[in-house]
Length: 158
Ligand SMILES: [Mg+2]
Image (cartoon, rainbow, N blue to C red; front, side, top):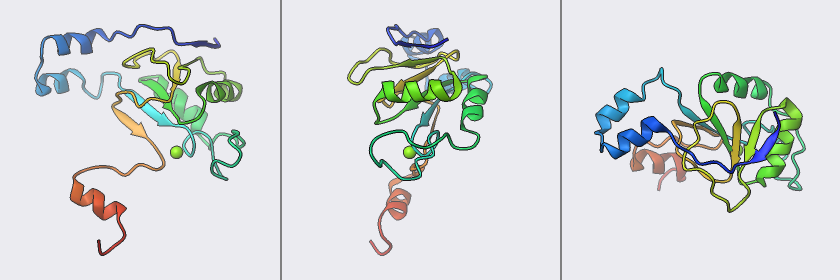
């Protein structure tokens, strides 16, 4: 229980073997099925922290959103979960531990401790966008193609 800075060497033997074997996309797809654990990236502000006043003074001032702590635990039952945030990672780690006593590891800003996150026993807090099966984010626009993306993002008529 508790925290520790991630001094970890990450190694996903399945992913590594597929890469080393130069496996086709089809084989990779078949190997990483829905039943296999995934890595889920979870945004912090607006998804875990309610963030009702935006950045405000930089503090984490709100309680968790309803269902957030339970949701993280539910995901961790099956998948590896990391939280990606532009905030100070230690600040987020402290807050999340106070809220839910999660087993937490954080990457100090500028430090790179792993290439992948596949640990289901603890949450990683990082500033980096690591590879993930899904990104849960309140500001995301799902990309399908550039026509759709521009239609979603630009004012009408552009
Ligand atoms: Mg957000």
